[in-house]
Image 1 (cartoon, rainbow, N blue to C red):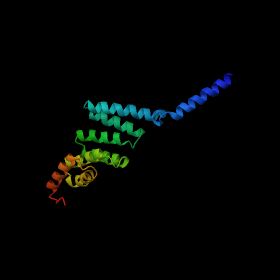
Image 2: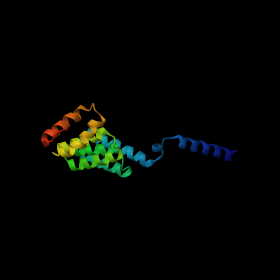
Image 3: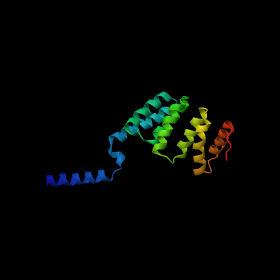
Image 4: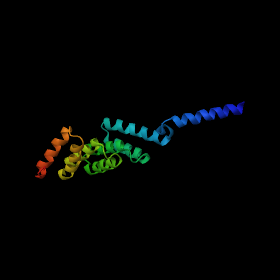
Amino acid sequence: MFRLSILVLTGVLIAASASAPAHAQSPNTEDFERLFARAMELQQAGDMLGAIDTYKAALTIIPDRADALSNLGAAYVRLGEFDDAIAQYEAALKSDPTNDTIRLNLALAYYKSARPNQAIPQLKRIVASAPDAKNAYLLLADCYLQTGQDPN
């Protein structure tokens, strides 16, 4: 009877773990989520250096999480570290190539670092995929003005 109870309990545990989401099974994912949440708290509190360190720690666990890469880029932008921000946004786009928010942030990092020529292709992609993106149109128009390029 004892042996039967163990077998039934084992079967229930296996069934429960099989139906649980994959992220709930991995302690590494839990560590990532804990670090990611902490990094966002630090960023919202204005501690960019703490946020950067914490995002980097989280990304050692799951290196291709687009949201963490993008948030890390935003923290770098707040510090005026545009080259680092651009590298993070580009890495985020490799993980999530259709994300127009990340693409707009990349374009803004180029724009803020006085590189309108690099911002233009990103903005053109946003405008092509999201015609209602008014901010992208305005930024694109200003990039054309700064570079003297003809938008056609």
